[in-house]
Image (cartoon, rainbow, N blue to C red; front, side, top):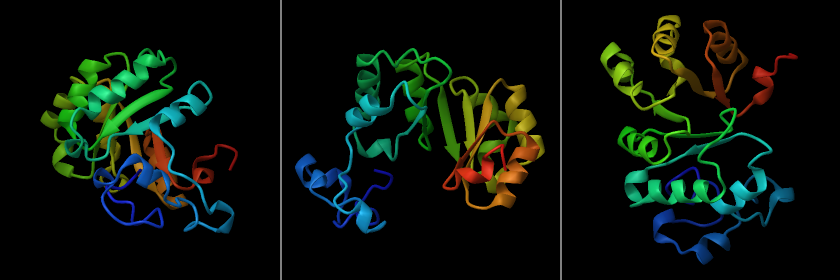
Length: 195
């Protein structure tokens, strides 16, 4: 789930943490997008890992991990069970806005690339970036705070920079021009090198 509630992306309502697995599984997670998707179920983390690992890269975002005790340990366990705690070619990346959670993930999965998300320019100071570089491989800011200087600072500290959420060709072009390493977008055609 992207949100802490099921209201926006299913036919149900309520907080994810207050619903049982069976209640979540019985929700229609596709009908809101179109009739051809009606009846789609919310996949489990296990199902996603089993279906896609080794086929595509998986960007795992821990949403509000402070609401789910031991989520870091549970995610680490699932990755280790599949030998994904030693990914190659950065096929697995774990990220969150909760920077303490990412410090913890770095200790649990030292070989898995870690990303810190932010929309705050306070996190772009030299001191903040240096702190992030002690445990993160990616600094992932919202595109509104990305500047050429920020990209250079992040790179100089040995991190990569991935920006989100790009919803226009102009934003994608700007980010590509300033040299970001990754773009998180709802429109992959905007970053297709063939365009």
